[in-house]
Image 1 (cartoon, rainbow, N blue to C red):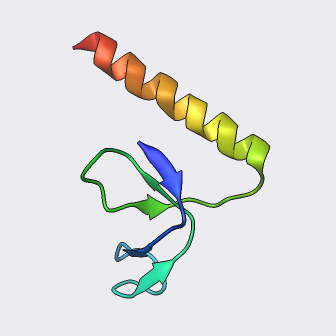
Image 2: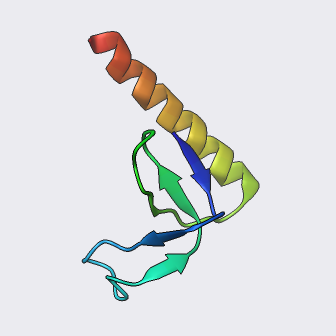
Amino acid sequence: MGYDNAHAIKLPKKFKHAGRRLTFDHQHRHATDQGVPYEFKDAHQLLADFFAEVDRVLSEVRKR
C-alpha cells in the first residue's frame, strides 16, 4: 500500500479521460494494484490519509 506519482496509470472508465494513461498522484492499495487516482492537497493531508489507510488495513488483517 502506498502513494506515488512516479508513473502513469490507466484511468477507470468513470473518469473523463478513461482509456488514456496519465501521470498524476495515485494510490496503490496492494502489491498488484495498478493504482487509483489520489488528489494531493498537502503533506499533512497525505500523511493523515496514509495512516488512516494503514489503520483500515490493519483492522482488516486483525479480523481474519
